[in-house]
Length: 537
Image 1 (cartoon, helix red, strand yellow):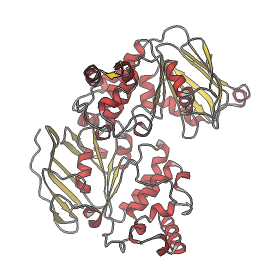
Image 2: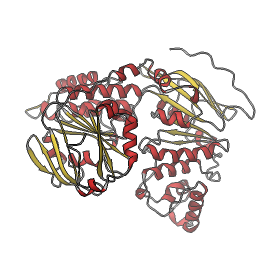
Image 3: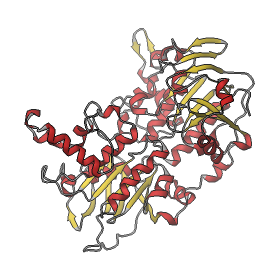
Image 4: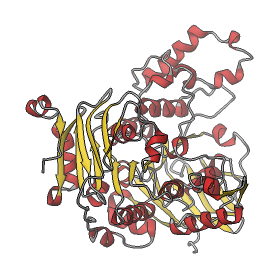
């Protein structure tokens, strides 16, 4: 795909903060970027969208100086810059980056994370005036409206406050350290991916304060509603090339989807029909209690896709981890295939042996091995069956891995690549393949499309529908109300640790799910009797 020639870049006070043009990058035979362009103006929040593998991450790495481009030109703050950027050059010129993992150190305090550059300049902690250090950190927090104790360990902070600390650290003007320029352009690479929707507004409230001073923001996300609500313009990459740049308010969701995937998938979504659940009970949960949950009881039928949701802190996601034996403080009983199992003594190994698989939300930390290869990850749960007399039948294992790569449409289809080099959507495909190759009876999912592009979401939905059609029961815990309404046969809403409501049939819509989540705690009658919706409609 080709792109039109770049337009002339204006010079002077209204010149773009950043203008990248003709950016091209190959990895072997793969063209990751094909003459991509990006322009960000002062005081602008600019969205960057695209499928996993569209080139977004490669473009960010090039701007950060981590990866050299094969071709391209760059202007920063009205000055032409030579590629490749030297290590640290982007920072010293006024670019700041906040990535999805935030780059914070949980074992250190809030203040130490904020002013971590001072440690690099001090020969030892004995040369640091700690009183002044924490006074400066406290002043910095107050300047950006964060009511946090700089002495508090970062590990004790809620996820939203960790994200805000990472942003403050990125934009805080500490230019006397190392001669760095004042921050003028902030690049946010999916920093809100692990945040509940309601808390994202706090991040953008801070960003609007920054852009009012002329700072520019590049916001990379898969959440189209965030981009549509909070950005001024949006650029879409597809297959490494520009699919277009639009004023955000001028394009609707369907238009963005068509730009992202190059086709219209709304009709396919509208035709979705719930797979019929089979008679009987595949799994029954009774009297689940945990730090958050109280007397939760529910059941799922063979071939059913059951959704669980609620507001942040309601505890809905704890249910699936308890069913997998990964929540040791939980009590209650699970009945699967007629066999009772106490949750307090349930272990993940026992759950796997009972035919239960778990797809966690944090796939790279809890589900995959980043330094292992695609083949090693996707066959981890079956590799033991390929040993004969202490010898691994590697050709057969490789054929199995290659077949899974094809079945789950994993790209690039190179089983020797390390897992950490794959995009988020392809990592999620690998995680699904890893567990579904076992043909489990029960699949537990936590935010299955978190940090995943629109095309991958459609693929994942098709995988799950086909799985339910074969008789496997699925329980999906998610804050993606629209996805739950489209995918699930029933959705249960958790509020204040109890079952609030159950939606099915014509009542199962995104708006109804949201309304029930906002409705509040169950009434006193329900609370007094415990929390079971097995007989409710």
